[in-house]
Amino acid sequence: MTSAQVCSRPATDTGQLADLAAAHTVFGCLMRELALPDGVSTVVDGTARLLLRHLDVTLRCAVTRDSPLGAHRYAGPVQRMTDGGRWEDLDADRLASLVAAELATRTGLVNDEFVGQVRASRDTVARLLADRPAQDPTPTGEPAIDAYVDSEQSLVFGHPHHPTPKWRSGDPDSWRAYAPELRTSFRLHWLAVPDDLVVGAGPFDPLVAALGPPRPPRGHRVLPVHPWQLSLVPPTHPRLRDLGEAGVQVRPTASVRTLYAPEADLFVKTSLHVRITNCLRKNARYELAGAVALTDLLARVPMPAGVGLLAEPAYRTVDVPGADEAYGTILRTGLRPHLRPGDTPILAAALAAAPLTTPDPLAWWRAYVELLVPAVLGCWLNHGVVHEAHLQNVVVVLDRDRRPVRMLLRDLEGVKLDADRWATWPDGVPTQVRYGPRSARRRIVYCLFVNHLGGICGALADARPGLERRLWQELRAVVEAVAADLDDPPELRALLSDEPLVAKANLLVRWRRDADRAAPFVPVPNPMGGPR
Image (spheres, rainbow, N blue to C red):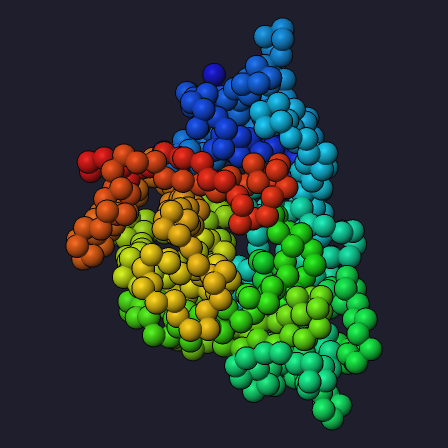
């Protein structure tokens, strides 16, 4: 059966497009987290098939790109084999119900939220597709910055390997004004905090002055807060004063809660009591303190030329239980110091979200991985610093010819220290930032190779079919060079052998309703393994 035979009519409206995207994402999660590890999947003649073992149900979907990583590109409806031997189309609701039945039997757990969350994520995508403005309504007029903002606000379909990528807790009407995908902009809300209730570190006031804050009363300091958060968690402490919305316009980035102020060239990472994908997006106290401590530590860790860090030099919150995490705010440095004339910064996730066309994809890919891979592996193996360099944590700087010339790592919440590589724990760094060696390796392998480079490799192969295996072998050559420079560490020998890679199991962690830190990992094929 060919892809053309499996496909039915293409989707023609936003509801159909959203439903098809949701079904493909759930099918891809089944492939990665259940079928591949269980050995119950095939891709033959442009069609992927998998078995739901506990239901004895076979599913299939057309494949337009057969990925050696198992991260296939799907087309057309997901179908099931009926008892009568006939194939029938499944919409996202029916597919999610089948998955729920399979997982309930497989795990012994019941999740009565799951099907509704898949449906809500699909409905969000449909709404975003219908309501997204064709053009940015509030551009800066600075082409590089406008391109960057557009990349942050372009991810309408979200994480390609999460079963509910656009599910957000709360009423959709409550988040519409703050949705990055709708190209929104707004002003920060401000609180005045008495001096004796202020907790923070770093040059918060000098940095935040660029945002145009209101003047606080005597004996108070200003604290910027996401306006959505104030509607979710209104301040109840009698000494906190509401100063209203003020200052420069900010643009929500792909993470929703982190806001970029183009005029100030400053990021504001706010707390937001909203569950997005797996987590409630609030800043814990250790994350606030850890951001500044890691900024100081990472300033002493050398990085290769062409790789920079968006530092987080200051935070502020309220020294009141509950309010400390509700209103904790981190300031992150901006983009302009890292740019040269003609450069364009683009979120890596936006590059991976569509076919990536370039005149010489092999040369482009080699330049990309030679910037990113030595930096991340060197930080880990030489200095014990684990960067979670997944697609949403890296900004790629392209030159005038759209070639990658610089990488900017960001979001220190994801940075951890490999405890086995630190004889003495650094002063001021919270112990929650500690990883054991197994966790450190899994995060490097998943975030860098499976999530990030797997996504970019797939986007290049979508534009140039048949290229993906060659790209993985080019990546192998870069890892081999890094291994030689680092005196052949065992961690890289394993990566270059036939040992599987690992992927975070977003379907399983969503089903279990666990915190993100408890997410299991599953083995996935290693396209770099074995001889070249």
